[in-house]
Image 1 (cartoon, rainbow, N blue to C red):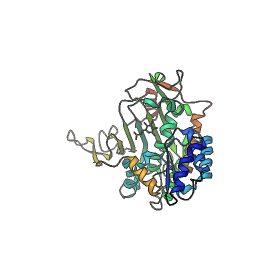
Image 2 (image 1 turned 180 degrees about the horizontal axis):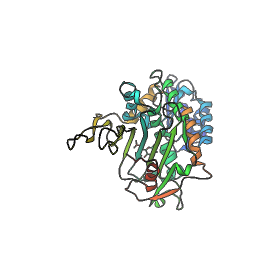
Image 3 (image 1 turned 45 degrees about the horizontal axis):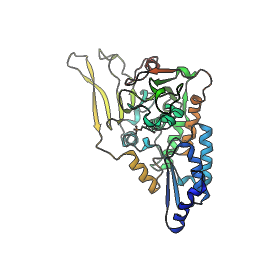
Image 4 (image 1 turned 60 degrees about the vertical axis):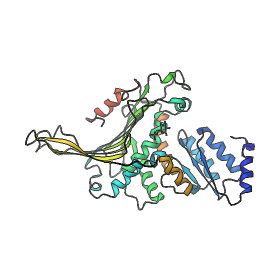
Length: 375
Ligand code: BG6
């Protein structure tokens, strides 16, 4: 791929079609992003008539991402560059924005005064399958948290954008990512896990310390959400495929209803997998007693929607950046994640876990230590 000759036929093809426009979609191993981009650039194929899309991961830490970005931006203008995060293209994820800003009943309570905590779960039942070599250099933090989970969190925690244009949306999402913080002492805010059998997967080092599971407690250090804990967790080889965002509200004062203290909190759940939809959980009277209540859920199930990639690739071809990630978001997310991937002291502990479960028990302790539990 860094062989200039490989680009000859492409050059000939382009020369023979002076009016053709080119869309380069790089779904190649990350180490090939730079040589392929540079190869395209040397053939002057980065001219006005082309654009380029990069699959994730865009870099493996802040410094490699910055180096890659400078190669890319030397060859292409920002409006020609599309950095893919396919979670942003999921219908259920896009619905967070509509739900928040098209309904006046939720927006007034969407802040630290009413929200108790935010949870994002992205569980997968599959292991690393045939991607052991890539995954072993990546791990759950780089593979899922730095990109997909942060993008989902940004939509939940952002301020209303000025309009639905890509710059307004990206501006607000970038602010959220910039405001993410770990508390002091990484080992008490982050739990790593590795499923047993992982080290026998093809392409994985026999003594691998790569995390196939991560649970994190973060804070969005901004006006709206200061003090509201955010819990993220993701992992492979777990009991099922499940992706959801839960916004959990503070409980009512335990005065009127006998069981209010034990009652379930109100929740809004955005689910991307296995179903796509939104549910609202609230309490109603229970016939067992005058002061008894129980939690019920009202659910909107989305009809079948296009695959995220259908939307992403068609937006790429039509030049719409809205569902892509801008460089500043990637930069800010690596800045935070660097603390983990280059951790030197007080680092997260790697806990073993059995495939088919919910990950290491330490992940439960992480949230239970705050008097809460995973939804
Ligand atoms: C990819 C990760 O970005 O997302 C994979 O590299 C992961 O490891 C996949 O399996 C999950 O995507 P989805 O859409 O199936 O939840």
